[in-house]
Image (cartoon, rainbow, N blue to C red; front, side, top):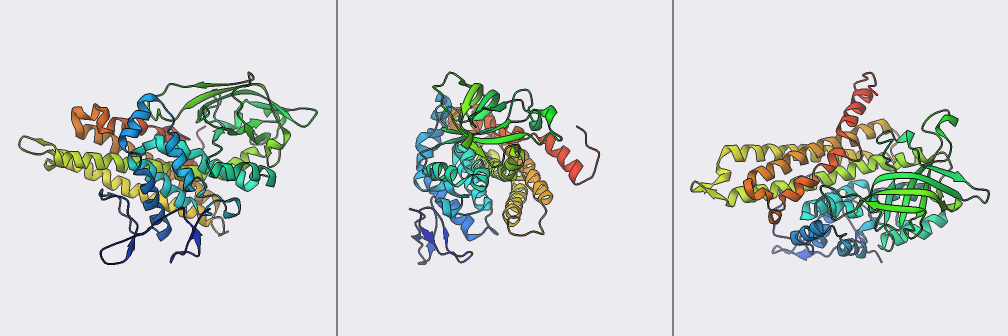
Length: 438
């Protein structure tokens, strides 16, 4: 069962299994490693820092060699997922009434950053990513029966979830997706269509599926006629096919094409009202922007830490290469980019959390902040990972130094779940009031 910790910053709130140690001064501190952490932590709440240290302790049991092996073997990190589930971390942002922690996206973002920063990278974060954000719409709009059957089992690690939205033809034009759930006489649905880039569909038990239930030409607005379902993924059914995509990075976590051909799903798998699915998934989209920004930050700090350590230790021409400004200045520049993106990310997360109780915060403001954070963090992470490889020179290509893995993974937050260009379009339109370009 979760334990409760009295926090000076908050009232009694749950944090999963955090054990304090005593410092030489006799005060309790939370520490997992003597490894120097680059990120400045001033200004974070006590809850965020406790989450960071406790999650880092879990991650310390999974060294770089674990992630190297799982990347090379394209093997899902089951033990890592189980370790996080055992300590209750999969429920960090789910309501206490459902067995979760009841914490905010601010703490969840810190958790995802810490996972990536530990050396697990995007693969480690993506192994639980959907369990954190995709469950938000379910927790808010699901029926008591749906919640009882799913949420406790997701938190315990007994069920894994994937999110089925993206399609090969629609791409980012979500409102024009083609997968269709046709209602049957008995109230059930028959699903036909195709999804793509579905993370963890090889191991997931459930999928949150966004599908049309009313044809596009029969609705007044494209955002209407879409419905959200929580369905079983029965990979043994011939009407469902899950095909793994060979990909560049994050190979420890599978990405897939999913094909439905008259795949039957029960009527009670519908989340919320039929035709309101797009509005429902919007509830989780801004949260996902924050989480992904945190993951990008973690990857960037991990890469920068590796690069700085190598620059201090590698001696060429009888002196450390970090003594050369050609090495030092780009690393300093990357650090400042990461710190700036960090402030944007946690501002967005705070705004998201506060908007739930503060009616003066407009959702458009939240959207601008979350999209900006995702953009800035992704760009900073890319710069950090590229510089880490270049700092290592030829050894940057070697698996054992990890930075090649980070570099392969750093493209993910630039591309998904929304491209850099679409974020720039969004800011141009919503903030600068420029004509829409698409």
